[in-house]
Length: 446
Image (cartoon, rainbow, N blue to C red; front, side, top):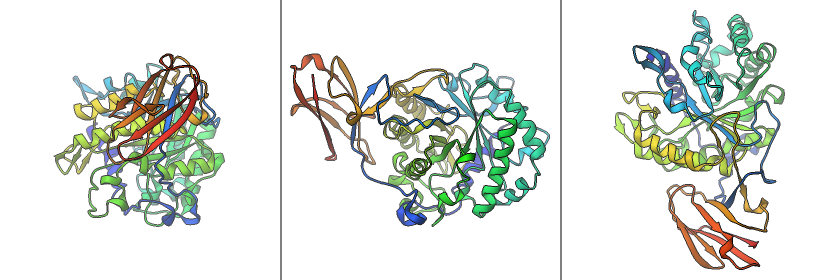
């Protein structure tokens, strides 16, 4: 079983072996899904109803409010047998994911067989289920898919998934933009659509996810691999934000690591692609490695995880699901396992507990972050606020009312509470100042 889970980790590692680019307008043909790197300095209010800035696309299993969040299953030794090693960590989460690729489809163990691992999470009726239908042979698998090599297994697997009552998501051929064995857009699209057609027929309740890596190989445009709106319910993204690359040095900006290894930067191309296609976003896997070449870098990983889970759904409300990678080994070059890493888990839990948009059940409800530009200008009672501006490091933030300092916040998500009953009736000015010089001001009345 450990070998089974390490296979999934190896797939994640392999995505970084091909040369990747810090995608922006210069590396994207036609200036379509390029990165927009403005600081996005903004103040948000926590609300119980969506503001006019909240997007809803009506896609399959898209929450009308709140963000599904969870992690990959982690198979391993549990007591005297094998099962879900990170079961306890999943208890308050709302989605679990499982790797199942073309290599699996050629052996005797089908998707239902592996349910003794992920099934424990689904039994509670609180978790959605994300299946990674990986092309283990990358581009070389496309012809095998379209020729029907895997049709029999896929048909039975989809029939099994159709018996589940929870939300099901299928990520088909993930990370095509960083495959080392490449495929032409035509080859990939044909293979993706072949599987999508089978899924629509035998698992019609499953949502289909097109999910590239956060950054593409040099001068490769993700748009050219898009299978078409009829075949895509969600835009996915493998979103990693590491301190070090496992093989390249001196190219941090190019591969999106170090100071550039930031979730708020690395998600940009996906955000723009999703906006072009009017689709919700799912972070299908990701995180920050807490070990590199045997060295413990948990403090880095912890800060990046806290940042991601504090700010991503706030700044980008089209992100409706977030799945963290939770597997690996400290003996590998990188390791994303964090259920048993107290430093990263503490930071993750801190961010999760302070984020009112995250759902502890797919049946649950959550609050919204609304930009003050979309929030009523007449305020009463207690108003909960949070602020954001891009910075590679943590900042100090200060709240001023009518030019008078009122409070400071020195940790993500830079939250403040304003008791309007302490203010005189009439017009007032709110200003948030950050220690890097960024600021945002809004007027309101009491």
